[in-house]
Length: 227
Image 1 (cartoon, rainbow, N blue to C red):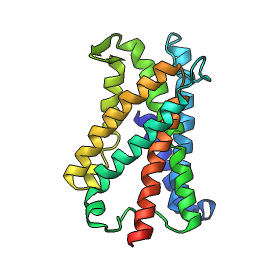
Image 2: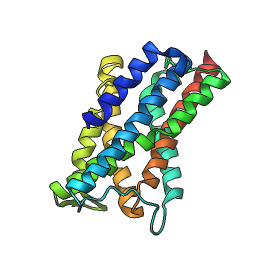
Image 3: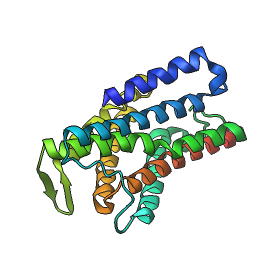
């Protein structure tokens, strides 16, 4: 996981500090470059996985049957609203502008929304395509409870996906950081469900992007309205 995430992030950070003109000095452009590099590292990882573990499935294909894109859109919207309330309920209750660091002008806000819509390209490629695809083979078995029927790998990667958001413990109040760990774990299970049902990464990529863009878009609106 870190071999895909950390080098890409650090290369983007180095570029941002040493060649700011390439990224127009914009934070959203830095985030976008980091995600692009992470997506590329995830794709390379899946290609290597196919060579070393031919039975692993990275789900890099167009959906062979039902795409589940409609379900992905609805799930993404629900995720965005859930994250918004979990992350910013004090500001919502007090109608106070969040200090989220997003740009509220048209250009900056559009950049953030575009980047958020693309987050699934990076994180779904790494966490669902590569890690779940690999661990389904290395850690066989499924967990069945009521209507839940998912591979053990989904729960393992869910924990990794939550841990990948550890930075929230450094910058956010404890209750918000814990909430982020919990919903990141749950989101991972839902993304794996979408991937298995559709046979493709497309649906989880859509859900992931819409969820993040919904939250960020509403946060920018709160900043603009209450700032």
